[in-house]
Length: 211
Image 1 (cartoon, rainbow, N blue to C red):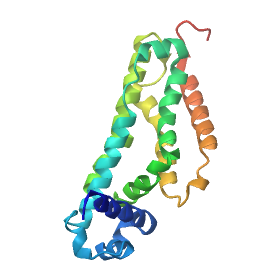
Image 2: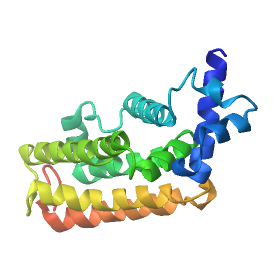
Image 3: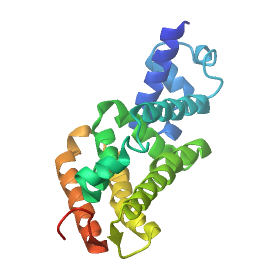
């Protein structure tokens, strides 16, 4: 079996994991779906967990390629030109754009459902959807303060308030079976309103703008 067959095994396994859950799919199920012997799969994946490891690896690589959670180029210029509210809104909407992408529908379902029995997935989810976003938003808010804007609460508190609905929408999305239930427009509007409300409640004035 060549590289193309390895990919076929991987994609079939992902489809079954997404539909039935990782725990409910066996190596025999995967083999049966593509009409090969179960032993043939072990030539490429020594165990079922190895397929899950690859899901995490590919997902992580794709996220890094997208630049999600990276500090925006020319951050100071963006803040001065567009204002903190607009920059923060764009950061909050990045995961929505991700979830709207068909490419990520299956891996999102697999990793969120597999977190309870796979330590690598828990580490991945924590880093990519909690730790790195928190560090990014905290850094942006620190730059906001250094540029002269003020907000009447701690940076940690404001970061947590801004990110809370993002995590909720991410997990809600992961529980859905089909993409058609994902109303990205509604979620985008809700997140923008959330950022607007939190920022205006916390801030006192903006550099170069009328209050």
